[in-house]
Image (cartoon, rainbow, N blue to C red; front, top):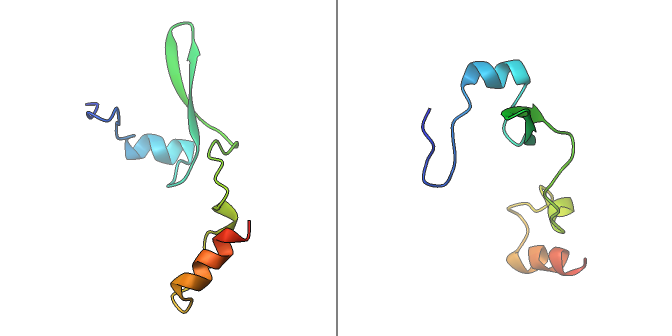
Amino acid sequence: MRVTTKGQVTIPMSVREKLGIVPQTNIDFREDKGRFYIVKTTKNKQTNKFRKFRGIASSEMSTDEILKLTREI
């Protein structure tokens, strides 16, 4: 397995399937006695104030309408 210049690696499909890792799954790395483990987490590390608006804008909305939604936070 090779690490990219961005520090990324591809988790093999067999590992993803066994762990139930799908796109948008949160994972963490744990260390135990010098070994590192990949574990699924339930916590959402990403705190984005616009997250609650994901998926509500439609192609029928104007840019101004979408911006108005985000400005009413």
